[in-house]
Length: 139
Image 1 (tube, rainbow, N blue to C red):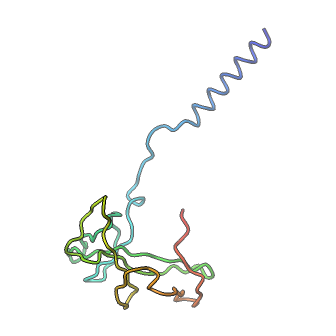
Image 2 (cartoon, rainbow, N blue to C red; image 1 turned 90 degrees about the horizontal axis):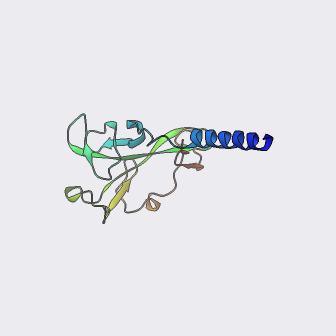
Image 3 (cartoon, rainbow, N blue to C red; image 1 turned 90 degrees about the vertical axis):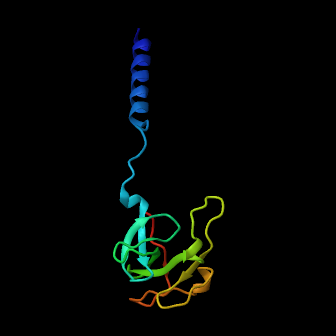
């Protein structure tokens, strides 16, 4: 009788733990989880938009010139700064094609467009001039 009672209690405890840990459905996705920084190539406005790899419409000038904007973080002083902008190499034919991703080009502020992030050279923190910089840590 005692062993049966202990077994029943153990089964109930295990069931309660499984029910508590079991996922209750799809996680809620908020707009901040799917929006990324953008910069309009025409008017230089900064805004948030979807993660599509193509140019999006700027809310300020209403031109389809909103390119992805990437921020870097200085590991020494903690400063966050704009590292580079990414856009399709030919904006006139920029479409979302899951089979063939767009051919991208990259540019630092005031620089010329290049075909790879490596061609942008060494990134330096504008605040402390450290080269110990990179993408921000994931949250």
